[in-house]
Image 1: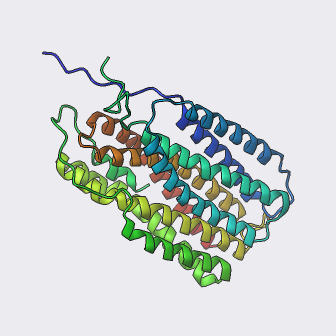
Image 2: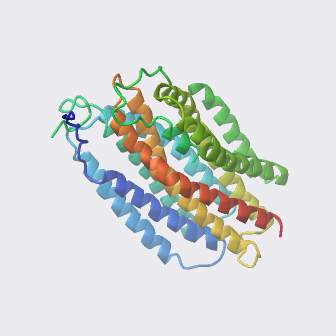
Length: 146
Length: 205
C-alpha cells in the first residue's frame, strides 16, 4: 500500500521568530519599568532592551521586504487591521502612563517600547497568515510535493 | 487564551478524507466592533475620572471574564468539542473563534489598563507597599501570558481561520497549527490560576 506524497510547507526566513523576540524584549523592558515606576531607577537596562528590540525588528522587516513571491495583499490586510487594533491597545497603555504623570526620559522610553510592540505584533500576525496563502508561483500555498 | 481549546476543535484526524465543507464566516465580526468601541470609551472615561468604582468595575469584570473564559473553555468546552465529528468541530470553530478574536483582546485591554490605574490609585505601585512584590509577580505572569497568546496562539488562530476560508482547507496544516494550542493551553491555564492566587492576595491585604 502506498500513501500519497504530502505537500511540503514553504520555507521562509525566521521573520515570525524575530518579531516574537522583539516583542519579548520590549515586554521585559516594560515589566522592568512598570515594576520600578515612579521610583528613580537606572534606565540603562530598559535602553539596552529597547535597542536590541529595534535591531531585531529591523532585521525582520528587511528580511520580509526581500521576499519576492509572497501574498502581499493578505499581509497588508491582516497587518493593517492588526496595526489599527494594536495602536488602540498601545495607546491605552501609553495614555495610562501619561495620565499618571510619567514624564521625560522614562515616558519617551515607554512610548518607544509601545511603538515597537505595536509594529512587531501586526508584522507577526500578517506574516503568519500570508505565508500560507497562494501566490503566483505557489498556487496552493505550499512548496509542492518532494 | 480561550481560543486554545476551541481551536483544537478543528484538528482533523489523519486520513480523515476530504475536508468538510465550511460555511461562510467573518474572521472579525463587524457587528461587535461598536460594542468594543463603547467598552474602550468607558475604559478611557474610568481612567480619566480616576473613579474608584469605575476602575474596580472594569478590572473585576474584565479580569473575571478573562480568567473564567480561559478556564471554562480550556477545561470544559474543549474536551466536549474534542469528541465532536469533524464537520461539527469545523462549524463550531467558524462560529466561535471569530467572536474570540474581538472578545479576548478587549477583555485583556480592559483588565490591564484599569488594573494599572487601580494599583496606582491604591498605592500598590509604591515599592514600600506590601502588595508591590505581588504586583511585580503579576506583571511577570501577564508578560508570559501575553507572549504566549500574542506570539503563538493568535497567529495560529488567524492562520487557521484564513485556512478555513479557502475552497480546499489544508487539513494537515490546520492540524499542525492546532498542536501549538494544545501545548500552550496548559501553560496559560496554570498562569491563570497563579493570577487568581495573586489577585485575591492583593485584594485581601
